[in-house]
Length: 147
Image 1 (cartoon, rainbow, N blue to C red):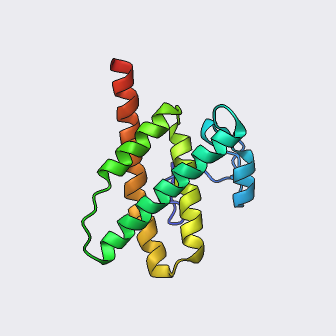
Image 2: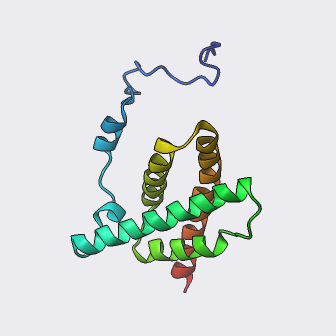
């Protein structure tokens, strides 16, 4: 395969019939996603909305604390909060897509009003938090399967 400067990794162009073009707008991508168990919830709609709001609020606070820890020395370790979040998500049988949806919703709210420096901090800390949350959720499922 010939690699060009504009295509250093050898990816096929989006016009290739075996590789359909991706939608560019957020609305198009959102509309094409299947509604997840986390967003639709289990049980009544009221319970699902409450649980969803609770997880968003807790993850949002966790992200705020992680970012503030960057700028001012505070005694904060996210391990306990992440363990509680992963356990709650595991009890709801949340998937990796659900974790990404949670992370995306929180980041979308944070980035809408933050300064460029704060946006960068939210993105960097968010990458670390979402990976750790997914790892802890995986550990929760692994231990549930083994017991």
